[in-house]
Image (cartoon, rainbow, N blue to C red):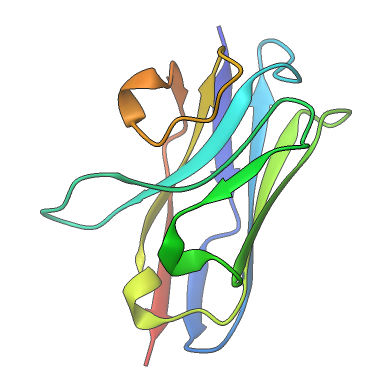
Length: 124
């Protein structure tokens, strides 16, 4: 069983940066697709970014392209989300997710494992 633990969330001013980390344990996730989702109260959980097992393929929702970067260190069993030029609308709980498949999916139903989430708050 894979356990995922996110860290790195916090409060930041608009235009600032944060780096989220997702540490996996229980088994190696080097062949897993890994992704970040986010959710605000009353809204559906939405895809933010995803990365293939090798790291060669990365995908982003349009609103974060050019500002967010997903990466992974398979030796550390860890995935990262570097968030720059943050906006108030990026405020949400951010979740890490893992999928045993090899295609990055934007639909949460494909993901087998989830972390507990980390709060990101961007003030204007």
